[in-house]
Length: 149
Image: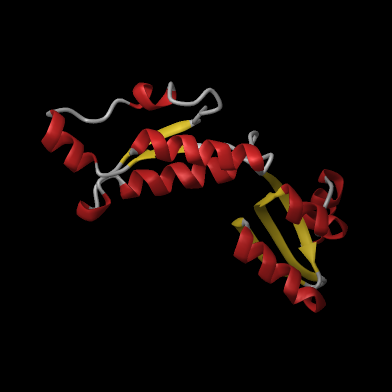
């Protein structure tokens, strides 16, 4: 069943032209596998199922028991941060919707309320960064803003 699921997911990824999207292989029900085979599943076995399967990370979980879920969340966060870009933005108070998007989609590292708006340092996906380009501070602007404080 797992091999069929891997095959199906890879075909969908191919149909969506999303082959360059980072993949995480999650081997769930590890507790059941362990009961049946007296060992944990071997990711290498599933990696050979489909030529396009190239997971950046593999995580073994037993969701019913809550095992491996923290590790899975850490891996998901790591992959999302790897695909994001760190940016410093100065968002005017009148653009609260832009700041809300940063908080909803990005990972905020730093936030300061200044006279002209909210200065935010965050990891953002390229798509959002492109939308918010007008608020992006270049390094020389960051230095000037820091001196003005």
